Image 1 (cartoon, rainbow, N blue to C red):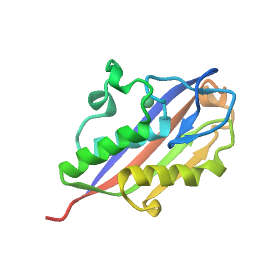
Image 2: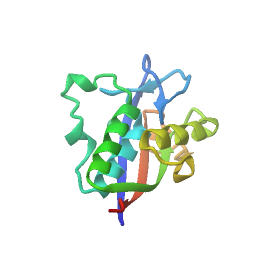
Image 3: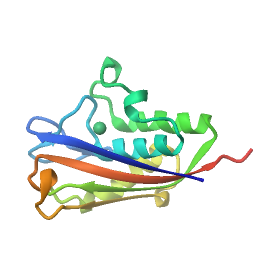
Image 4: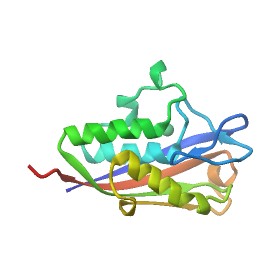
Length: 159
Ligand code: MG
């Protein structure tokens, strides 16, 4: 078994979509970045790549590469899943936490989990996504950005 941890941060700004776990959330601000800036999906990918000893998303999908401009992070997650499978790993579970002061995310969490599970070709029960504020403290509390943590467990594919 291997465990992995991922962490990511994106800045909030006007004129961008807010995409979390592949869910488009209507709000006045969105996350800035080269791809769709889906901070929780990025944290999940880094956890998976970390557990497999395969580096991080910056190594596999560099933001200097025009192919990844505006790309759905769920597509990148599918590519990570393929890399893991090729290396003989299966995903047992993923647990992720989004740190955001606003908007309220609770109603969107199940859809995020389903999207992540689908991209990884695992059951929705194997993916847990939760959200918390940081009580108004720090950059997430000030609404300057959002952060996400993720952990995962991998096991060897049989055979
Ligand atoms: Mg990122």
